[in-house]
Length: 348
Image (cartoon, rainbow, N blue to C red; front, side, top):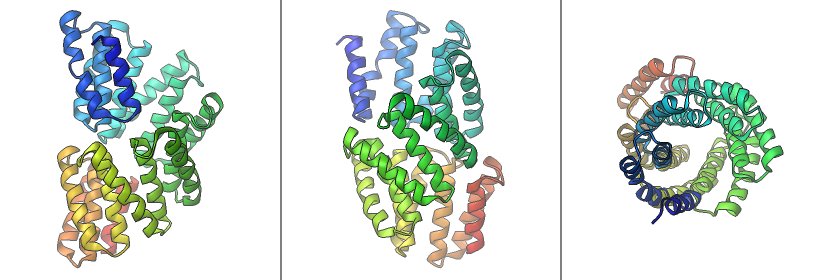
């Protein structure tokens, strides 16, 4: 099987969300190219970069990071700091830092890449818009929602103009803006955009594609925020079952779905069902992401609230204090997560 055919088949797997098949296909390539060419040959670096992106889509962020650091350092040496491929590597590593909860490191790299791409490619170039979108996601995770909104609106308008309303990148921007509206409490605007994205993704990608499932999950979360818990539950059960089948029990997206369903059970007063799922999510996130990852801390605080509702106040307060202590050290006192954890403790 030729290398070009392998890459072509890999792209087919990526477009259909078959990341496990893609990683099996691509894993041998960097080693093959290292033997045939050399470790820092551009073809070898390209294959290593593609494998890193596949690891990232499988939620294997530490493995992705190791490869991305290797490729970035090599491209800096071979191509220089400002070469488009070097900037691509920098952007990829920044995205992985974002997934790992290392938001400040992600922001530093993204600002550097954005400034370079604006200078070299121009403000409206798709790569510049991609970097702007990624930086907006970092601002969102840092709790800087107004800065995120400002960038997201700019990117969305540009993508609609250049790519069209239903281009996958435009849909990503619409989805991101909806999440920011939700975090700002603008649930009606969030719902409107999320329904639009979900319908488009169902038509373009199919019901079971990971992006479609993510859209369904986001809409369910908005329903929950609007107090429409039965509608949220119905969607979340469907998404969780699909994620388990397509991605596996411990994939980060599966854990997000499980955590969201648990919160809905809690809002419906089904505390034992909520507890069962939340314990599972917390243990998995500790193992996969680490105890200090923001998503792990959210799981701690959610479980603490459920313990409190079940009358287990000592366990609730102990876990809540732990989440707050770690969050203050890693996210800071002003981060929305830290403030939310304090509100949970105060409500006990």
